[in-house]
Length: 272
Image (tube, rainbow, N blue to C red; front, side, top):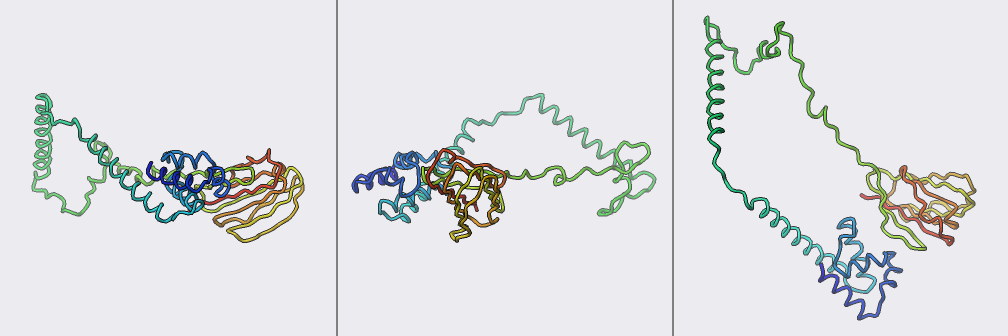
């Protein structure tokens, strides 16, 4: 992706814009912006974060973000195809067909003879005395008995695979997308609904928005607990005195701002 990084860096330098200016506009840390210019996207958690960072960078320096994202996706698909082809070559490289050892051939022949003889013996034994084999499609009592049981007790069926294996539940995760002296942005994963709760250790003014809609503004006292509205895809919390409050989201504690004295925004986004 070096071509994308070179393009962004060239446009930025021609317009005389610093990475620090872009960071202030986009709320993206400088090290991530530098990674975009270097063409090293490995520091991003996934494609959705790469595309989001590219879009914000492009818009901040005045270039067409949609065209840039489209160019990135074409290059990403091309790299994935190249990687798949390399893996296929490695998979089949060096594999040669070897003849079976002589001893293995003997064992195969012996097993085939024993298996065939067993089938013939059972067929002949079941046909003695004029007895007719059970009709096809009708289960016989013998077929339901445990093989080798002297009393003929019914076999106990084994539990099905679906009763043994259970899908592991995904635990909630909080990923920090950006952090500055004015704002922190987090992504919440592995939950169906967002459940934020504010706890206050000192007197603190707070303002709450959910999905861009104003919810409440008040002054909370030390020891007070404030449960925010559940659900929604994004919640924004503005704290007047950040060290006086900490946040718990679906059981995960957040207080990265306890050394910041100015007004501070905390934004939680739920991963769809």
